[in-house]
Image (cartoon, rainbow, N blue to C red; front, side, top):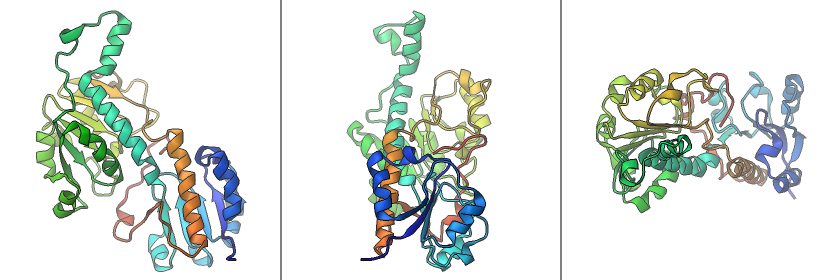
Length: 345
């Protein structure tokens, strides 16, 4: 019988009960020899000492310094934050057989579901209608639908065709949307095989009625949607921002929304918590959400399932299958997904 791997489980800012269901938490010590395994952060000096004998580490960020060359047993770094760790020597990991894994796939379905709901809420003005009812100034029937639109048969643009888009795309199919996509990291043949029409970003932005911002933040796409592109949006368009605010010139977005240039639904912000006085809070035709799209219990417990499954595979000398693996061509191009003042998905 193979030796159980020794694993440093140091998930803070995540809590153990947040990412492991009660059943999976009981199962964890059956799969691996657990070191620490608590919700509070392990003292750094103790953690570095524990790493010396660890086969894997479960963490939210690499905070242990330049110690990789001393970790002869280390085979995997499993991040539970939804992003790949920053401050990590990826070249050393790739050159020495250390797999770097992210729990990002756990969030795909939940974020896609929320994105779909926000798009419908935006087009049908569900939030505005609810607010009007509460105030007692609602308009009934046709009068309450002036300017609203359904999602059926609309031109929909996906900015980024990674994990989030692949979860959202099937949800759009019953609506008969014509789906286009822009992804700087995927070729046209690949996109066409996914059943979407590839378009240059400028054309996608100017022709789509509903635009979903789904791309992973990278060193190359900060403020990808700058003012000039945002000004190309159709007056009847809805912009659904659910990946990261990193991809949008947020000041320009705020100004254009205040001017009523188009609609938007937004789940992510440059700084979180959002300043109570931020003008985006008062912009018309906007649906706002406090970074809630992915942090439902089902998604967080799926992190624990993925961690357990991949630790079991690693312990059996097999490659991990559930979590997203860092690739040499992309690892150094990812931007940190932390937003100022907040630790989240």
